[in-house]
Amino acid sequence: QVQLVESGGGWVQPGESLRLSCAASGSTFSFYAMGWYRQVPGKQRELVATITGPSSTNYADSVKGRFIVSRPSAVNTVALIMNDLQPEDTAAYFCNAIPNPFEDTQYWGQGTQVTVSS
Image (cartoon, rainbow, N blue to C red):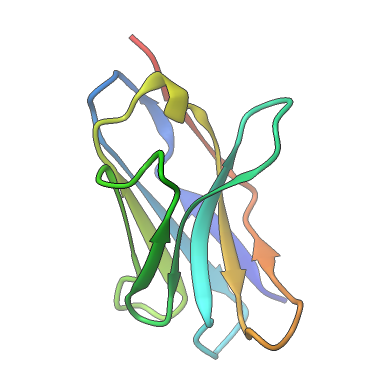
């Protein structure tokens, strides 16, 4: 059974940075894509950033130039460096993994809270 575990959330002041990490267990195959989504209460979950293969990235317009998604060397891990955080970045951040682009299966982590306020 595949499980995704996020870490690194917390509270920061505007302009500060945080690094989120996600590690998957239960699979020996490298996932096709991994990424991050976020959700605030009452709103739909939205894409933050994804990375396909080793380095093909996609970002939401709201985070371009501030956030960096990467796949560290360990198999099936993904990191999100968030710079210049703003109050509107406050949300629960969820790790996502797509093992195979030709199948519908995808996995989600439990989420980690990021709060940006002064």
